[in-house]
Image (cartoon, one colour):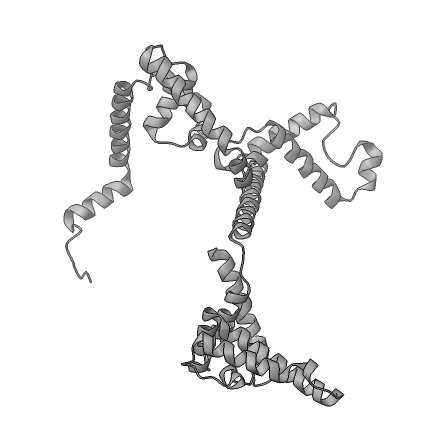
Length: 341
């Protein structure tokens, strides 16, 4: 709802700018225009809804076009009837009447008047707002993930290691005849150098996309990952999680069965407090090392974590920059203020 309100607000501002740069009457097309709605109905701001309705009925009977004869009289009555009807539409509703009173009290607040007017006129269905919001988020998700994936592919294409490997695979697939410039001698003649370079890069990119297993945040996006599909699959996801949780309790809590590879990796990931995407980004060799160390056992993981922290401290202690930082903290300290020439 916030997004829709902002969109309406910006539209109102633009309308206000357009109106104020035209003639001087910035609200001629809104409420009663240059007329005063209360004066049109012959009532005051203190009048009740019943008094306003009574006055409107009396004036409507007086100026109804069917009660007048002659083209000029009928046309004049019709114009008066329209102004009276407009004034009644403004004053009969409490919210509209409050907005109109705000206009009378604050005539200089141009943009606020437009916003209040359109906020009430453009009543948006909450369901439509939700649908539009989810759709926008889904589109942004999908486009952003494609951009990240494209960035990763371009990065690998720029590395000589992967680029040379891709060129070797292209040469092998072409029977050692080279990988650029089109198919065959005739194709190379037809293509310019820029076109040959472009085709060559496309071939390298295709090889890298087909053979590079990119995991984590830069993985190739899938349609099932966007918000719309996730919401559609939510009942299935919840059901699957409940089944998984029940199976875990039954097999490993009650029956005390040994953990399988999937369960071992899950426990390691949970101890490390990593998401599935973050854990999948770890090198396979490192994951296998976790399994060999049996880190799914809490005591083994705690001991491994202490060893990693000690190793990190040792590396930092041997780092010249960290040594300089420690000397600074020892000599100056975080709470000491000095003025050095």
